[in-house]
Length: 317
Image 1 (tube, rainbow, N blue to C red):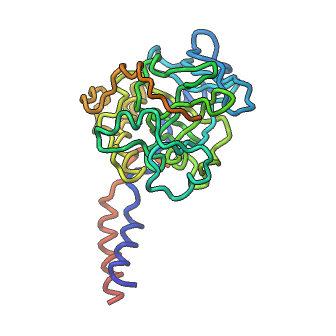
Image 2: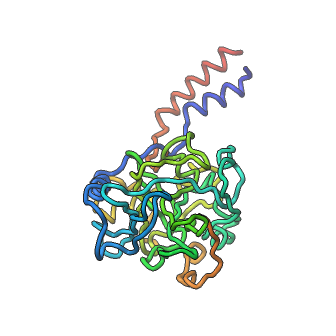
Image 3: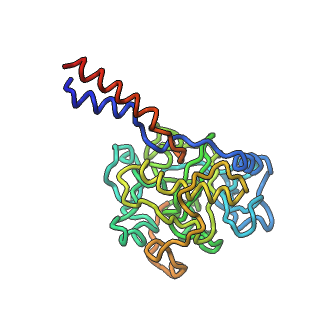
């Protein structure tokens, strides 16, 4: 092995991704448990009902506001203790994949919002292999339909996803279309699903259990202010939205334990990042169907890498 190869191997081992697994903050975990134990979403808490978690689920999933502060967004809630599952969306830009999207039989070349909003950032569209996007809203010739913008949720805004005991941040990037018999919910990009459940996920193999919490935040403060849309990896993009996502969660539940600082979630995005409600009138609909931001300190590891690299280099000389 050459000295350069030794250094590459050592660096890869000692300096893993700066975005590591993120535990669910206690207040958000309490909300998750309350949402699952609180029974069906009914009455004024329902923004729209009649959606299917699977083709055979009976159409009992709702866009729900139960237990959320008024006007702060919504989440997907199934019957009883069910929330939503996670099917896989591979739409949009197809580069940088590892082949797992190839098993999908329903890939479209554009997402609902990526093509419209990201060209000004030098990005052709969202990339399911990089961008952790969530599929929300239902557009099509079926009934019912639902537009998250009627609840104040902006295109490409941050969505908090609780999967297992981890918190991952995504963005609202796509909508469910009429390619199924019923109006479906519960879908996310390959990148987000991989962050939740690992590389066993593929284009036609998602997470079937209805235990995933998707919280879509309302308001312009949820539109990413400093998202790295041109990131070349999931980790780089996730890191760019994590601080703002942490602050949105902290503001929602009054739990400051999640906040990482560095991004002002109240900062109104610049005109180059913001999305106007004129999108309401956009007829250019398409339609289709581990992670989170705690940063590791690298200072002690720097001393370690110097020592190990020195031993490896001189030992191979």
